[in-house]
Figure: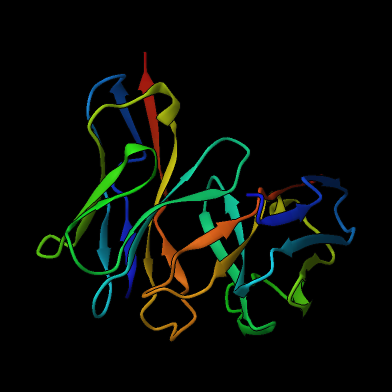
Length: 116
Length: 116
């Protein structure tokens, strides 16, 4: 977890408000992924970036969701307006280097979002 | 369609007994397979991977996994379970259609409960 810093750890907001989740990955990665985890749906890939460029955002549930990666050391996931069904744990993960099929991901500790 | 199946929502085992967490996969081409573990309020942590070579792969914390091509399985095993192994375990396979981006497809997860 130490390699990927997510903030805030917990967020409680009212329906209709804008929410911004932040991810600060360690240097040396080439791909960054945003996941959402819920009891009902498990882990869902929302979007991923390679060299700061969005590659596949087909997992973003609605236009209310948007993600940016302005540079290699920072990414945001924004929900506007938020709804109760967006309540979940949101994870950021990075892929460090490339060895054969990849060494796997390093995940942040997640942001637990509650929309009331 | 490419997919990963973890047929058991929960596995219960007594401390000191061997444990197995099952995973089967469906993917085009040669599979790149992974196991991750998630402890409460934490992100997923990499345990082990299979890319090629010996069918028995050894990983962190005494875990190992056996790749079986004919059965399209990659079961996670440990000879002697510890209470501290209690966690959520995810099997994952590299999406072979994601090009060089190493996108992973995760299973639904299996909760392992080790009882004293």
